[in-house]
Length: 110
Image (cartoon, rainbow, N blue to C red; front, side):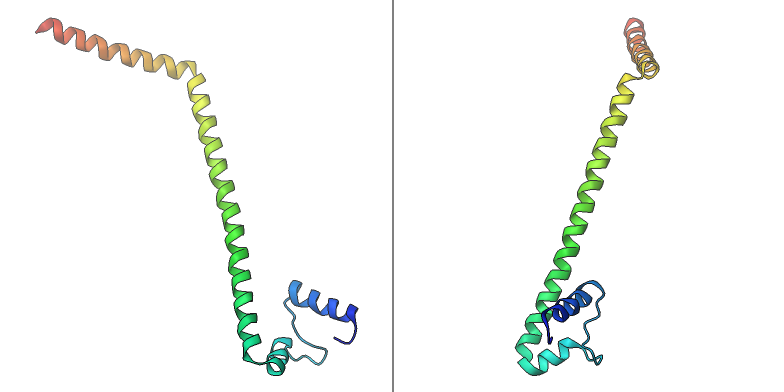
């Protein structure tokens, strides 16, 4: 990190391409943890873990929410289409009248 642009470029490579190495090819994480100690390494690992799982959790939550919204919309469209289907309604009305007719005839025979 001799200059600010080089630091920005290194951070860009580390975040976007997961290439966290210095110019000689040594991992930056190991060099920093050797210089600043195990506490930095532990904090870095925990932060990376929480950020990774947190971001994954947000992405999955958005996906599930969109899937549930699409399923609800689809169910509403199917119900609306079914209610507007005159043939379906007519057939169900005939079935209902047949049930009433059968009940009426059974009552007359008793």
